[in-house]
Image (cartoon, rainbow, N blue to C red; front, side, top):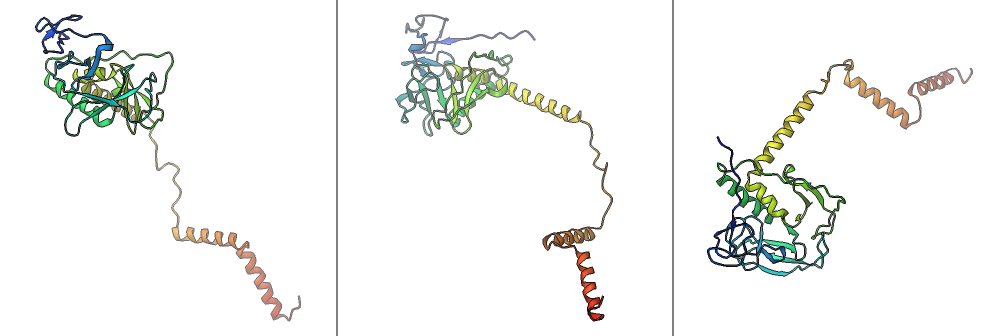
Length: 276
């Protein structure tokens, strides 16, 4: 089989037609194409990419984009990354919906687990549909930050954990185990792209390799003989009686044998009239 080619197709956000990279206008409908980050003020519910505010189709995956309303974040908290203002975006997912918390300045995004699951499920469905056409999942290059910052959860304010998502994606996200995940600009789109390229299979394979390595490690440990140094058989009732007797002696602060000898001497004295 020949080598598979990875081709990236960009789409016009107005009509959905393919456009060339860095094109300023669509050849099909003549609509202007927005590329600058400040002009990308909408989020694709299919791939997580950002696009122009008036976009009807995603420039990345070509999917239709529903209307999205933006409202202020009800809790007075700043962006955990840049301290900018946070706002709520209704993704237009219909009944049950989904809200994305985002920073208007740095475009970081906060997702509750249920909303993030929506993106993952759509990405995995797309991966299953194109399984025969793609190569292996593309991993991001794990960035090494000069200064590591642990961000505060926008919900509870506690410090979040930093995790390489899926263990193999190379995309480090900030996670609050109770409330959700924080994605810096473009990280959500990178995670979705990883899944659309078959990343779930990569994760399963990595987990299988880790489990196999752990089994080999355990098998290499020296065997422990449970019978070695075992105590001689004993009478349980006799042992319990001995323990109870010792405890009674400790509680009454006397030795049973010494007490018996003292009692014998008193009895002997009575019989002899008290003479020694």
